Image 1 (cartoon, rainbow, N blue to C red):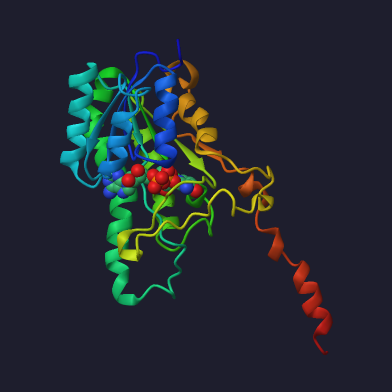
Image 2: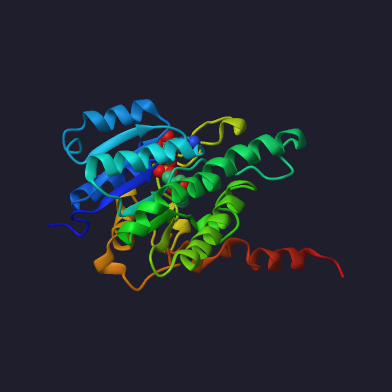
Length: 277
Ligand code: NAD
């Protein structure tokens, strides 16, 4: 019997990457999962996967829509009888774009799309799930990011959007205690198909596992999406994380303890030597 035996989970962005790995791990831990994702093809793949089909129901829709999120919650209650966990996870990237690079006329459209999916989408899912989670004394788990704590884990849109998730976790943990716990996982690099917002071109811009330079990170490993799933199990499991709310687990290969030492002054010593006095 797994840690999530008899738990019903509603997860967004389960069609690929981290979300897909969480779905597989949660099912292995005994959960039933409703997946909301915009990508029809990815959902059909899940529907066709015999290892998942007894425990997973897919719903196609956009996380920015309250109606789509409510449809997923209603599906969970209809198919599995209740809802215990909401995992807000669907997101898009910004191609590391800087403010000077972003054409001034494009800022508003790109901002609305990226913040719509990454921030509003989490609020819509949380709001749709709330009545059922209050009933079940359940939990919310969000995918934040190391970009929610540090610069240069994304560009001028993605980084502030992930900082906003830190605020959502803390504020909701405060608002919903003691009935509903609210926590998050802040991953570092994960090799996935994470795509830029359509307004920024929509291409996949996260380094692939074979091009990622792990030596920039203290742990010096190339992680898989599955490597991150244990933190989600911990936070979704009432037995394992009962005293935790407002907690954000930083699972970032040690990146944030190291900082960017490459430009910390050693190069400046050479520059100073060349300066004529
Ligand atoms: P991914 O693209 O593999 O998965 C994201 C999923 O979200 C996809 O299935 C996609 O179809 C879905 N999605 C996108 N927009 C949607 C919308 N409007 N409505 C419904 N579904 C939508 O990428 P991933 O890396 O697995 O991303 C999952 C989460 O992890 C995101 O919140 C991302 O910001 C976060 N994250 C990723 C990394 C990384 O390095 N890949 C690091 C830290 C955090």
